[in-house]
Length: 209
Image 1 (cartoon, rainbow, N blue to C red):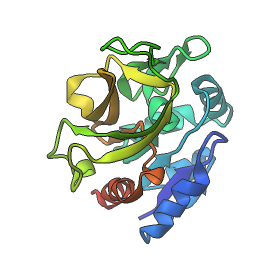
Image 2: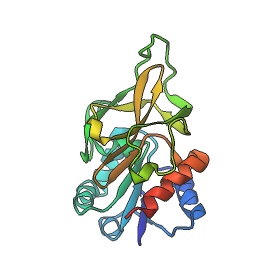
Image 3: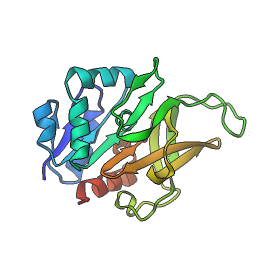
């Protein structure tokens, strides 16, 4: 099995690669069309701005290749910004189109929560998952209230219920945290910074058929 980690200039590559190493899997960094099409599974890390990341994917000629990979049924996992890129569009620094593999859009976390409290944005730190679809392999061994580590200012809105695997709440505000549509998976939090829970999620993805 060939595991690729997408290197497109917007990734938290070092920690992601360290996590994969820790689990005993071999991987390679890919940054070209040919490289992307040669993998059996692909992880898209991401730290930074949506607009800049999409511009970089376009510059490298990878946007359409990622759509083709998804169409072929290749498992793809996006992390943090990498997850957000999987959706239709983002309002960060003006409206930008995403890869469009999952229905929904990315908007800034509001400054006031559902319960009326002032929210700190970015949302940084540990928060507990609430599992919405426990039968899926990506959350095998993961339970409601398991903590994971977030660093983000934007969240997914307009997601279909069938695509929502797990979420957390931030003063009553729902933060979609794990999403899945067919062979496409996204984690808004950082599994590579989430201890044993994060490693289990990586392991579930890398061992999935």
